[in-house]
Length: 155
Image (cartoon, rainbow, N blue to C red; front, side, top):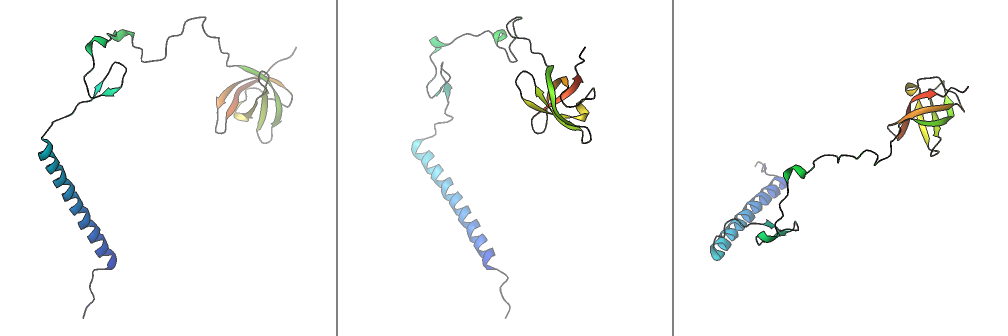
């Protein structure tokens, strides 16, 4: 006599599928019964009041505010000249460490004493330790990197 091809796992999946179908049918019947009892209301609305809150009652028209469409700005606000300080992207500092054989080093900023990584690809002039340099900052993989590094010529 041959063994059944239906395994335990297959029969369990089939039971779950049939139970899911039955639950879905019961929910549908319950919704239909509730609709018959309460009657069909149609689509319910949600209103936004004058404070921006959702309500189920229509807003009071006397509290409505008229806004000119041209006054709405969907961008960065225009800056007034003289209002903000001019930001100089070029910084000054000194080379704390530079290994020319490996092609990297570190520069200490003169203003805030922060240490920035510097790679040989970001150099304009050749630098060595304790040189005074100017540089710009650029976001790198692990933080800010010094780029466009130039040597300050001392007289």
